[in-house]
Length: 189
Image (cartoon, one colour):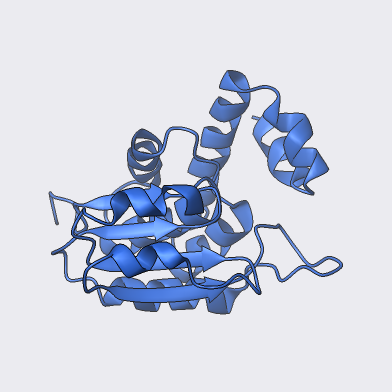
């Protein structure tokens, strides 16, 4: 069993933070953007890197004008993860660096370390990006694909509950964004 994480250099950020990472020798980038969002100009300041861009909204299901995360998006994230050999510096970003990107990085952690408990992976993610609120739909798909038997989802619900304790105002905000199911699941703990 592996004792060190397979991916040791990683960054999670939002669009506005991308320019600040151009000098960090980023080797792999996973971009998670809303449909219709162009490639960020900040990447012109990066050195040579491997980049995959996926377009879907940060939502929990279909809705008017929404492209929700689907199993094929998670499969593409897992395919991206297979390109990472443990060397280099991985950057995962979405618009704000809080939901899609943290769900994707958790997925990559779980893929790279199948023997590491889900709670430890979520704890590492939270330490890396303190305000993390991983997208529950994405985590649910990853949970199934990686055969984690609901453990990733349960660990993320506990993180959501913690975030609501620290930031109670998020409950109303997230409900307004159509993410009430995540709030309800966290509050039920």
